[in-house]
Length: 248
Length: 299
Ligand SMILES: Cc1cc2nc3c(=O)[nH]c(=O)nc-3n(C[C@H](O)[C@H](O)[C@H](O)COP(=O)(O)OP(=O)(O)OC[C@H]3O[C@@H](n4cnc5c(N)ncnc54)[C@H](O)[C@@H]3O)c2cc1C
Ligand SMILES: Cc1cc2nc3c(=O)[nH]c(=O)nc-3n(C[C@H](O)[C@H](O)[C@H](O)COP(=O)(O)O)c2cc1C
Ligand code: FES
Image (cartoon, rainbow over all chains, first blue to last red; front, side, top):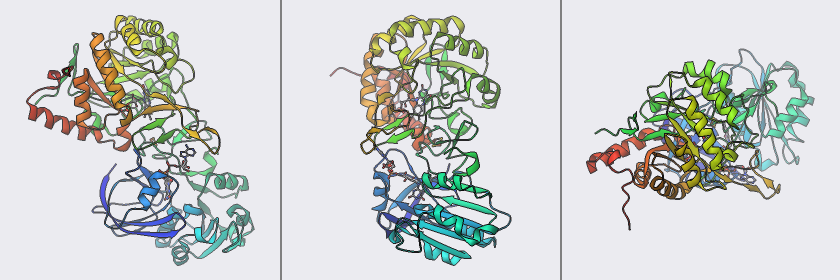
């Protein structure tokens, strides 16, 4: 595990409780989509995990949603603050050899999928995105996805932007899904459970979250129950799993 | 300057021990393990154990509450698959988690001849299992029985890891010492509850968990001081260490070795930092760890 003293270059509010952090590193190797960094905060003992949402040279972007004290502490940091980070952690996603692929984002789940969209775009794999959130204000990163994807479909629970309904209500009716080879999804657990029921007939990789202890494979805190009846560590074996292989 | 400490004939290159459950099986981060005084594995049970449902972790600024449970590969896989892969130069202590005498018999008979294993930590204290563990550890009588059974089955060093949950740890300490334990480990996590007021139910998947981290240090320091003055076998402290200063406090209070637990979750290299802090202290003071153990003066 590599530790970093990094500098916060920008902290921008994107929506209610939603913040985009630009962080500059002094030294940074390869970072794959799906990998995450663990942030030390002044509010909690353990580190907090955030996925890489984008990269530009030595700068990484993280997008966070405030849900508790650790995320609230980070959201209040001002530009120039020093950050104690560990990472990159976890396994990157298996990149597809051919497209088109579709990204399915529920709320803050758009964050790691943006970096995946960037990498797919670099590899000239065709990519569509379905971005869903509760309301228009919570729908984030739409422009960024727009510049990287063949097609971006928006949806909100209340219909304030794009189609009205849950991601899993809208997905089956999309004409584009027939030629999709692989799906990548990130969102709340309820979304994964509904996706499992939809049974799309193509591989679906799920970017999972879990309350982590160490983030480095030492404590078994983050386990997700596999179909084999054993817990698998989200931090070192994931955080991306084939949806087929996990119990929800 | 040497930081070595002896417990009987067993030599430790420094007083730092990586605590059970916070450093896996010793298969990763070996550059840290190899600089420590000793390493203790996750608790091993007779049967493979899947552990508790999520969520398993909660924390505040100074505490961790975990309900991982004894998720582990079980005795058979540990012996056949894991142990052969462990490649460390630091004494390997295996944490044995039995629910009754039979379990401890099976565990020790199976592992006692393994050369790689330096000694055993008897887990008489885990709050994260329904039966056994803590229940065993709450009775001086049962602590004595498990320890003397273990003593009769192995010549390897035996550490009795105790609890203060709902029991008098001075009595269980005495029972373990009388039954032939080589050292006491004080203490395992404290029973703790986190409540989800919206759901009106416990937050952790297992219902309750074990409290650790900096907040418990003053409580454990007191126990270490009291027990080490009453019992004549070495005490190993476990509770809330995050710095070299914390280690020195425990040594003064009477501990011979000091375990690092929750801090490893924040930084797996914390042991290296703490070791440097200790080196600096002992060099400046011109003394050795052995020279300060139990040297807390009266007020
Ligand atoms: C691999 C990975 C990648 C991630 N990537 C991102 C990302 O890119 N962006 C992002 O925003 N998040 C991400 N997360 C999630 C993020 O790590 C968490 O949101 C963060 O750790 C929360 O920290 P906190 O201290 O703010 O909240 P905490 O205080 O720890 O609370 C976390 C959750 O637990 C609940 N909770 C805590 N205590 C109680 C209680 N007593 N009763 C009921 N509920 C309770 C809270 O309500 C909240 O929903 C990721 C997680 C993982 C594992
Ligand atoms: C995630 C986690 C898992 C643990 N698992 C075990 C275990 O399997 N066996 C055991 O004896 N103690 C276990 N413990 C207790 C620690 O070894 C240690 O005694 C305790 O956490 C107190 O020390 P600390 O405050 O330094 O963490 C665990 C602690 C944590 C935080
Ligand atoms: S968070 Fe500790 S093993 Fe994954």
